[in-house]
Length: 95
Image 1 (cartoon, rainbow, N blue to C red):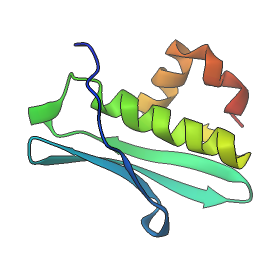
Image 2 (spheres, rainbow, N blue to C red; image 1 turned 135 degrees about the horizontal axis):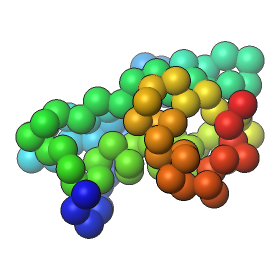
Image 3 (spheres, rainbow, N blue to C red; image 1 turned 30 degrees about the horizontal axis):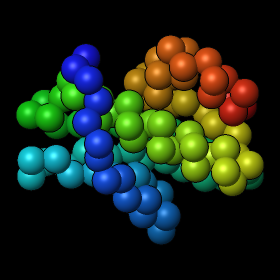
């Protein structure tokens, strides 16, 4: 992966997603919230902007949100599960 670039990440709470745009392409992380658990269901990054740390930035944003809100996290999408394995500082959030 290339070095990460600064991204502006939006949290659309009513749509249960985090999103960002880069070079005209939108990437998103979709989650479900229920009973104090935030389940990461999908992380999608268009191929055109892949490999630049976009997915990681989205997962990090949702994990920081979960920590701030006192939520437990269920990493149901494979990317988010792998991210947490690579970043043990978030392991305490996993339900």
